[in-house]
Amino acid sequence: MEDANFTLLVVGFFIGYIIKSFMTFRSGWSATAHLARKVGDQCLKLMGTIVYKVSFMDQLYLRSIALTLDSEVAKLKRNELDNEFDDWKKETIQLFREHYPEDYKWQLEVFDWKSAMRVLTDIYQEDRHKEANNDDQ
Image (cartoon, rainbow, N blue to C red; front, side, top):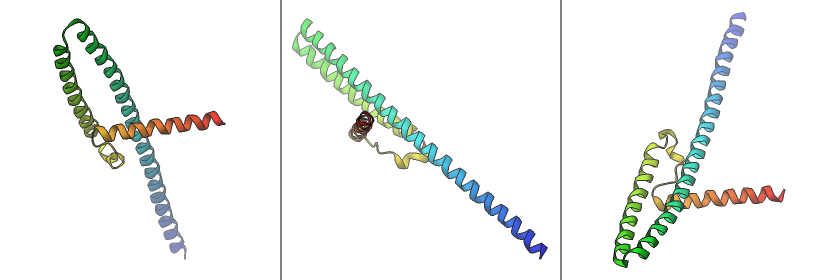
């Protein structure tokens, strides 16, 4: 009878250890996935800010060219800026997808520039909704 109790004690200990290890792994995995999502969201916010500021600077640049030079040069510069910006968008999304942690790519909703801007819009709307709820309280 003592051998059975000792065996049950050892088996119970190992089962408890395995369950504890699984729960610790699961909570760590969940926290890391949450961190990866938040960092990705912050990167998208940073991209949105950069786009806004670059667009503003491009408009100033084009206006100054239009005022000092002829409209043909301004059109050429606008096309150059648009092409450079399109290249930057493609490269940025490609790098974002490549360097997103491999284990958490299942939660990634960004596939191209349009989907990135859609996700960014959702993030901003969610932030506004949270702020509105905090103001109501």
